[in-house]
Length: 142
Image (cartoon, rainbow, N blue to C red; front, side):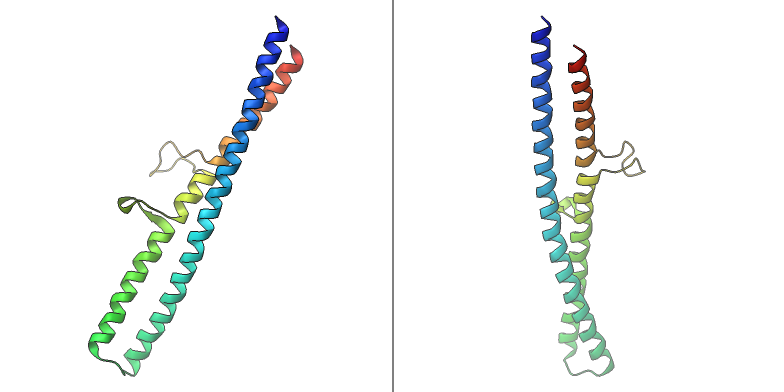
């Protein structure tokens, strides 16, 4: 009887290890996606900086038509919107931002926006590892 029980819990322990591997893979892919979004974010910030410099130059010493300057202002507004989406995300358009990806990885303490908090991948991994240690201890005792 005890042999069956020990075998059962060893299988559970093996399942916990596999779940940890799955979560580690998920964390890796999420971090990879976040890095890609961060690079796009940095590129957009650079383009915005160049555009703001051009707008400032045109305000001091105009060399373009008023229509061209208005077009630059419109581009600035669009870039600012895109930068905000990269950072925060946009649920309406299902755009995931860096903040949301960080929340998936690291979790979030309870706040007014998330009264129950958010359990991140790192929190899940810690809980599974702790459960694995408890199971190892239990297996030794039976």
